[in-house]
Amino acid sequence: MREIERRRLLASMSAELNAGVELESVLRTSVERSVTLLGGHDGALFLMEPGGVAIRGLFEHWPRQRTGAVISLERLPHTRQAIARRRAIWFTQADADGDEGAWLERVGVTAEIAAPMLSGPGCTGLLYVNFTAGQAVPSDDDLEFARDVAAHCALAISRAQAFEAEKRARLSAEQAAREARQAVELLRQLLGVVGHDLRTPLAAAMMTVDLLRDRGGDEETGAALARVAAAHARMAALTRDLVDFGNIRFGAGLSLDRRRTSLDAVWSEVEAELRVAFPRHRIAAEIPPGLSGEWDRSRLVQAMAGVAYELLSHSPRNAPLEVQATADGEIVRVVFSVRGGEIPDAIRQRLLDPFYPRPSGRTGIGVYVASQVLAAHGGGVETRASAESEPARLVVRLPIVCD
Image 1 (cartoon, rainbow, N blue to C red):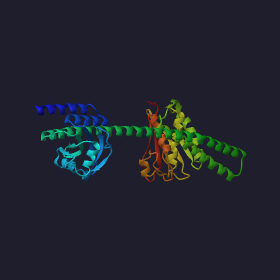
Image 2: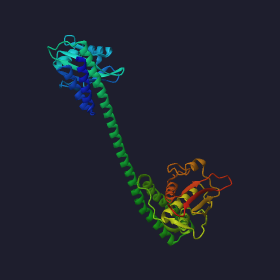
Image 3: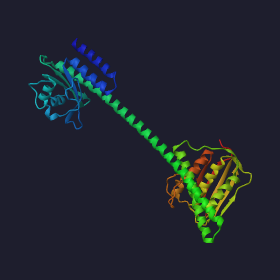
Image 4: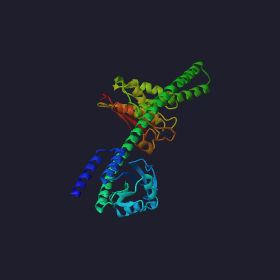
């Protein structure tokens, strides 16, 4: 009958332990229920330290400065015996050795059960239940029951620790995600602010160039102003791409204002920009009249210019740029080619990687933004390997009617 009653008590204790997941609650229940079930006066839980040579106080029934205390197992012979035998050990203050007697005196008890908290082949800690004078010496069955109680505590504590670890990991991940979102938003704002603030000095610089051109001057001055204008055009394009790159990668993406637009009107703006940015290159374009589609004109100008900039950056200084547009059903293809130019295989394979460096030290942000603009229209940009005698080329594919 006593065995049946103890099984019932263990089942009741297990149910009570399983009702909580917070470590503090499980520790409190473990110690208080253990003290009650074993008829003790006081109790404490100690967990094994890494390395298995010491134990650390985790929870105590009465406050006696055991929580947080680290005790070497060398100073606790009965505890070592309990771990080695994998069973609960009873000892009195008279039997105590090492630090055991001092601890019993501090707690104010005369005897103690040290029960190892077993988990599989290992021991995770010790359950101590303390007794005052007059307590009968427990039987072997009593000590076996104490070991079972400690094992139930070990299982519940292990589960609570896993829950706490998962909770900490989740909170840490959420904090990291918040910090990442904040960093991304800060970067997006920074790119936007920098891009916006650069426009004013760039515009002032170009106004100065136009003013000096209007005043006239010798050929050398004109050439110098042309170089300044080209540099301005490239910086303006980079600034525009930088802002859009921030919106694409860290913001809400690109928005399009699609309207019926003729490709030759788009190209006229692109060519005007290219003639300023690359004054040494001759530009020859074949754009069939009447070729039009539902496109965002300003975005398409940006995309075409970005593709041309990328190709010309891999070309000799005076090589002509040839552009040819054709319609194939509902698809427009615009082929950009430069004889004598060469896009290295490594760059061709990573053409749309915005941070893959080019030989000139440039990045691929411009052509990356161009590809995103074209993708928003349902199109794209591609490069093809060419024979030594063939020109370097990039091909823009653009639906006439966007989805």
